[in-house]
Image 1 (cartoon, rainbow, N blue to C red):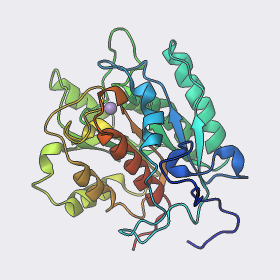
Image 2: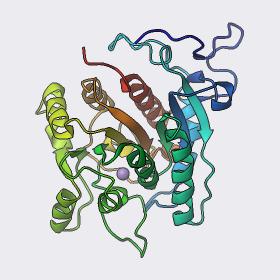
Image 3: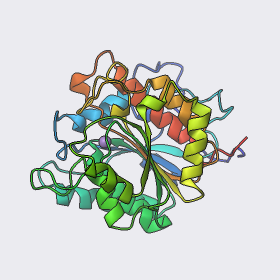
Length: 317
Ligand SMILES: [Mn+2]
């Protein structure tokens, strides 16, 4: 990648330290300040699909606040994620809290506006319901997607409390709608929340293979990443990170915490092995500031989004 003319990078003001001023994501420009965005970080403050602790609607602002220390150079990749593509903070999608179907339609419409201009979306949730409209928008442009899904839970459940669209069902609905390539989707970090073995069969039908959290620590990250690559094939890839894939020690601020999860370092060790994937969209979801401590979860999510931005377009070594 070569340096391009006119790219607006992170705020650089010697009189305004990183901790001061309004927190756009990574102190990047806003969408209206540039002519075209290659990558847009967007907040989606919606949590009406949550089944347990509410509050992920406050995730985007919390993650932005904890993104102030994201730096211009990623030395492990020898990459400048904000130098060669125009990356912006596109603000929050306009979405209300009361009507889930209307909210999902609104998120899809706003995502399509960006995607149709060739802008890749890195979304900050919000609960996991938001993945469904984002997958709709990405699949409309790229066809069936290979989804790489980091999560403690399967999120391929059916109906709960009468709702078919909620934060435990986005990937089942996506599979039914033909948005997923059913041979090429992968869960990572799974460990919890199954009522009956039949749910695992439903999950496999929705297109997912599984790497459980128990495999971390036994299998090196490079081998896990090799399995992930093989599974994803060469389809367009959508990466979804539910921050509850991390152990509650590493991400206490989330809505449905599950013990015996992976560490932040284990998550990043796998992500950093994924150069060269054809990534068309990403999200990091389920950050719940009210249960966060010392910004642990906000920092993990902000850095996850930074890893996404770095990985997009990054060639294999
Ligand atoms: Mn989830």
